[in-house]
Image 1 (cartoon, helix red, strand yellow):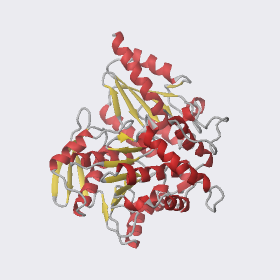
Image 2 (cartoon, one colour; image 1 turned 180 degrees about the vertical axis):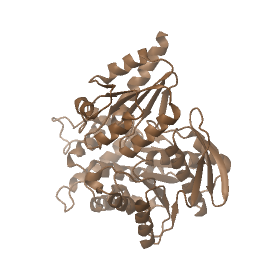
Image 3 (spheres, rainbow, N blue to C red; image 1 turned 135 degrees about the vertical axis):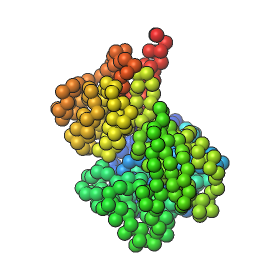
Image 4 (cartoon, rainbow, N blue to C red; image 1 turned 90 degrees about the horizontal axis):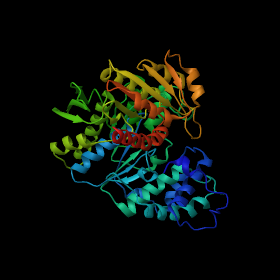
Length: 457
């Protein structure tokens, strides 16, 4: 059930007086807190967790931040740990198909029953903070607290992988004290909150570095690396930098994935992954290095077979997700310039001669002109659409920003996809990209249309 379908709670329902009886009511109360907006800072989280008994102090975790690659790195590491026999909690955002995905163990989302119980527990504490000096916690703070309680007191996995929501330094997940901190990449996104330069954004991302906790960095820009190195030095933390302390060499790519050589601590191995793109090789390498550091801390053990099988099985919806081979239909949640650039690079590598149609929708607060300009480099046809969501850019607005000679716009993306599937030849490719919220709407509709198409043939 998508966020926008739930929306705000109905006006006739008095949340302050009533008990929660249904899943829809519980999730509706959480989403109703969107009205509080984004409230960076950790004071509310610390107070909320104190009222809950400081459950975060009883969790072993890895903290994963960065502009792009967080979700993929989480899924690579989760599968490695699961292959080694560990139970693994994951806290991720946004969800792709159902809200419960955000709090999962071994890939299994939290049950409706447990989610309702958590809301019943957290709700009176959150509302009781209304007149405090910090005010009521935001939607994301509520979800973070719920996840922490679930992992610490109900599910009790061996290890929890926390994905940063926004930035790092003031993100609500930054209350944890992890075994390893990870910064996957730095890019120009969420500048209204994080700053307008690589250095400013890097400062916010580096805020997850804790005293004495080792840091794995996948960032590429020298100025970003310098910020991470200096922050780590101030906090007495070792930094393991991609390209310096561990290395990858990409082999000829597979039909449905990548093959690469990984070298670290004097050892070299070759691995295959099912997700496409050079950026996914980097994400997999970061996961391998994280596992290596956990092993060095005597927190886990694993075999080479665990690493190989874990990486091969890793799958993350909406990230270069091939939902149909002939014709090729691919979903990719590229929602900022760095993500778009990675997508364009992959298209040029893998679909150099095919006719490529790109269907794009995004939120208004993104660098739309820049993103569209990059997409135009890889598109034979580029089409713009919109969907029902706060802050979404209209199709007309996106269309106007494009200079592509073969540009289109449509208000009805469902009809557009249906017609496109009927007219495409096997040599063509359709990429549906932009906001992950858009892709979460598209995927179930697309799967159904593909099923209907197969039945009719």
